[in-house]
Image 1 (tube, one colour):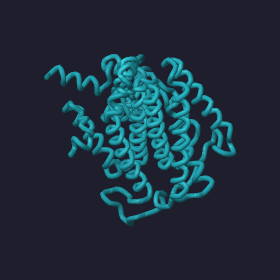
Image 2 (image 1 turned 30 degrees about the vertical axis):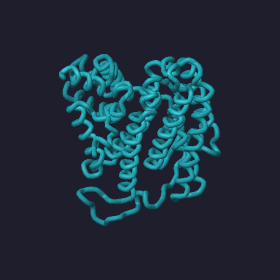
Image 3 (image 1 turned 90 degrees about the vertical axis):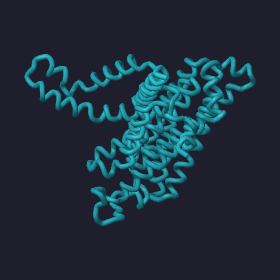
Image 4 (image 1 turned 90 degrees about the horizontal axis):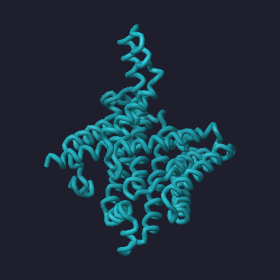
Length: 356
């Protein structure tokens, strides 16, 4: 049953299986394990980035396409819900219409970009997607009457998802069962379903063709596969999953703005997640998202503890200063790429293969 659920794509490493199980249990029980709002926000962000990074891996890891417009579709999903909820008020109808409109727009744009750009060489396609994403970011920032401009849009979600909605008067195992609780588990169930759906796609005959195109597109074309069609479909599927990730983030934050979903920094984060976790493995998106999001949120706090322990030491206290957490974050990522060139998941699977 589990093998079928995972589309016969098992972790193939005992340590990796344990890590994935721990991540799944921690995310499933986060409202009960972590009382602070910050920890719950981190867990929700991990789930959203798992979906976003896995969808980008459909392009980069499985098809060999380098695109810098992926966060554009992420922002389209979030803006769809935000704009619809702002103009029509809180309600499931506004969420449904906004999400559906976002998915249609993401599918249309990705189809057009794929159809007209995927015939060119990889570097030129990357530049085209970067230009389109930059233009969309500028458009979202300037259309203040529609998108809220640089300030973004703050909106209300349906009453069932509002923090003020209490379902149980007393806490259950330390967790308050309210609208925020329901929203979290909505994100958990949908994210898990989307990851399993992507596993099914990459392990289907369609996914095998994408991997063949990644390895040698000329040979795939020679044996009868229209590579442009498959690349375009891969582009559309990745855009749809990214838009759904944006919908989930908007529902959780009840806000969206250019810096929240459209910034180039998010695109770099997604690229780092895929590279560190392991390209061509959906599990790599899980591992990479956990590592990156935890590092971004807790590395500075950890360095504060370390700085307090070495206070007074001339050079060391300056190096471990919390103000330099970005420097150490970069060093950690450089070391991880150096020692795990195929990503964490790829390295773990290679170790198992050598032992066998």
